[in-house]
Every structure is written in structure tokens, then in C-alpha cells.
Image 1: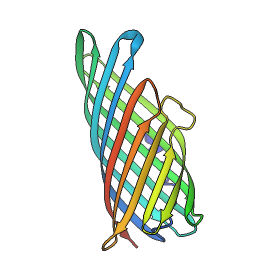
Image 2: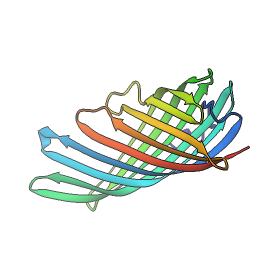
Image 3: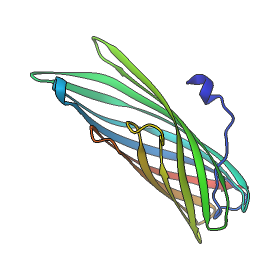
Image 4: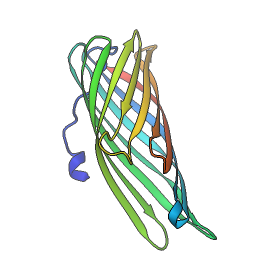
Length: 199
């Protein structure tokens, strides 16, 4: 995973912020509930953390950007009549490339995610990577984004919706929501973003 994180930041598109660099800080909340019916196991987690985003927007061109998030909190695992708690963390890295086609910007995305759960009895870790696809749509100062992650992995596939809004003295506000498309696991994430444009 560390080697993948050293890959060059690749490209993203966003036409409403023409030829500008945008840095954003985000607060992220992610809630997960999964059930292994055949073993009678129920697991719940609620992770919070921070995320950094960078966008290099170029009007009618190829643009660059990347995101990095780290979330931590508790994980509760129950197999009646016993329950145990674990410390959980999740790290995610995304990079995107897109081509500005006026109002619409199709994009592809590469993501890497690592999860760790530590309890007094055992430790478990998981690493995934995926190829994602989506599109940006621009309407004046508002930019909307829809994306499908992990196109080739139905277990980890998620849908995301995002908007960015530019206001005041080159400030940017954004929000994003994501939902896991896996019947065996419920996961929902939301983030709020604030940042500024640098020329």
C-alpha cells in the first residue's frame, strides 16, 4: 500500500474553477454494520477522521487532484452471548483523471484502502484497491459529481455524490455522501469540506 501511495498525483477535472488550485480540509464520518449469518456474528463501527483534498483545475484541459483520509474509532463485534470491542482504523487514498468537456467531465479514479482492527485477543487487517468511474457536471459556481467505485469488485462497490461551491473571497465549501452497494454489509459515509482557491 505504501508503494501505491507514492504514485504521482494524477488527474481530475473541474471546469467551474478554471485554472486554479484548490486545497480542502474535510471532516469524515463513516458508519458500518455487517452480519455473518451463518456464524451469528454482528459487527458495528462508527469511524471519524480527517481528509485532505487537492484539486488543480484547468478549463478545457486535463486536471490533477488527489485525496487522502484517515479514520479511527471503535469496532463492536458480537457473537451472542458474547461481545468484544476493538480499535479500528481505515486509511484511504484516491486519485482521479478527467477531461473537461465544457459542462460535463467524465473521469476515472484509482483508490487504495487499508483497514485494521485490533482487540486484546487478535488483530485483523485488510487492503483493497480499485478502479472507479464517474462524471462531473458544472452549473455556474456549483459543481456536482457522481461516481461508482470499485467497478470490478462487487463486495466493495460504492456510489458517491459530491458538490463543490465557490463563494466569497475565493472560498470553497463542499459535501459528499457515499453508500456501499453490498447486501451483506451496510456502510454509509459523509464528509464536509472547506477550503480556498490559490492561483
